[in-house]
Image (tube, rainbow, N blue to C red):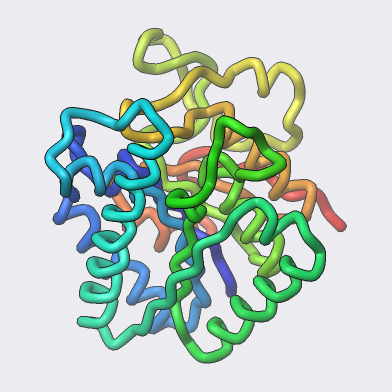
Length: 260
């Protein structure tokens, strides 16, 4: 079993940018336990800019590009130190892979990324993947930047031919309406096909520190399901939900991969 788990900034950090220690420790414990059970795991981790904001004591996410890049450079160190320390306590080795759009769009470079990830998984290493935010410039557009890690996680899932992609977010899944505004909104447990009606359910950005939202998650679902990979949106407040998912239980919203 090979899974890609994407964790968002809202799961990793408090609103001020400082690390949510209890949740990150629990996430690393669950991932370590899954690896002990023989599951191959790739972690796509957001949070570099958010962690940098907290580490530097800034009042919020910088509005200018140099500020975002500088915060990402600081925060990425914090992220990898934490993952290395916590996963190392369970005798698991991590590796850092920072990607740009060119790395996944160019066929030759994409093959090298695939080969590196494949070898790391063969060696029992847990790769931690993020976009190289210290050099990516998202104003230029998708040709030079991936832009957010929901899309990146779907690209990585396709690269490693994952069995499942799990997006751990600050919401339980896809709802019929925004549950933060509509008390009558209900969770959609299974999406067999991503129709225009499903796409219309997407809202805006989720948090002040993050760059994603339901729209980016649906885009990731399109990429993953077209490659035959099931994608699940689940709440990152309870990383233990990964156990239930691997047991075949219903958690969050499952987007069914198309048969290849």
